[in-house]
Image (tube, rainbow over all chains, first blue to last red; front, side):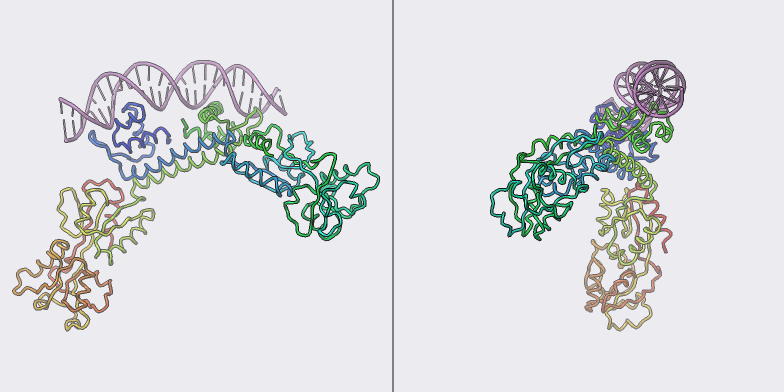
Length: 294
Length: 294
DNA sequence: CGTCATTACGGAATGCGTAATGATA
DNA sequence: TATCATTACGCATTCCGTAATGACG
């Protein structure tokens, strides 16, 4: 069967057209080189070289085989190199899930940082809600996911990637638009567009927690899942909404944003989750990258 | 260093994800298979498989290496196949020189016949005058050439590829156009556009031979090299010309052709020439093809 | 305790290098 | 006769297969 060492021998002889020089180039003596070529010719059942004791010339078949041999050798070379890079986490593909809201500001910054730090790495991105990401991580469809906490599946590990403030979204003409900042007290009378308890449980629970213990609860007039849909209702005057600060990136026409003062200034968290004991080398680099991000 | 057998072993295990089944597929026992994988991993300095005594899984590096390994194996397979085909003369490139006149009729027929008989063969064609073709064959720039005889260089061999009649080219309004055929006698008074003695020595000598011994020589009013140029002069009424029958394929406007009766009915020969002892396997097939051509 | 990957070990084959041979100008 | 590819031969290494070991359910 074909053999890399035979290919190297043939390439050397074909380029030198001289067994002695080729052997020197290969750090070996002529006799074994001679035999390697003979074996290769027997394996192929094709004469590659016309040789007398005075001259060595390529046959037509040899001329056709030489570039193929070089190509195979080059391919083997790059394959080993790339594989080492992948093993070291400096190259390859990382399949990453993300929630819609993280795409507004955080994800693009992550992609840019990744491209700068690891140019040979490709992020394969898929938008999914948190629950689907957990499934996808467990089944191996994605290597990691940017999800809303808490991550309490025993097969998963996670760490915080981002914590951002909440802001109040108001319709452009609203009386509170003029304020520099708002507190929860300012919202106690307001109609609020809220989050669906199952599909957007993280923000739903966050809101419930914020208002827990207060005398008067705000009126939740709708419950939605996606932030851009919520802003649409805000714009239509259905109510105000509490959204993560990244929502301001949307520049939603007819919607204004106002900072919200809270005891916990950055309550909206995004975590990176992955399967416990994952052997994807890229993951370690991605986590290092996340920790360095502002 | 990398090894084809290791690649085959890895491919089998990566596809089966089971050393036992992979070993069976490779017609070997598990232990050497195990070691081949270990050696491959040491050569690459990369772990390709995660294996417990209960399960075998690919690592990220292994997933990236598998398609490369398969590609290398496939390439090696096709390279051996193609090389065998080239050696057998059923594939490859044959660099063929040809004279301008042979391109009118003979060369296209040869190309078609070649394509039908040997679909994996490419003819690389170069128009050159006979003298240049001889040089090009000797220097290896072309493998063979369609040239005008005689071929008397000791390093060359040749055989006749084609013998065609001569025809008389006349301007459209010429008195002799009405004739069904002409003889040399009909031309003894005529002005003739002839061939340059050096650049077109074959046709020059042919004409000289034809009229040798006759009482009155025709008047050679011009000496050119290329047939299409000669026909241009014929059309302008400068004189008649004797050209190979293939020239009729040109459909030169304002030029008529008339058969020429000669003792030797097909005096214009085209030969295939090649370097003596050429080892180009395709050449044998091309010669066989030529002999079968009408 | 059964399955499956790995390690241990003995024998065969492969491959190197040195020395001898053969062919060619 | 000098050069250069090939054949001959001895030695070390590699690699297979059988047998033993070890890990995991």
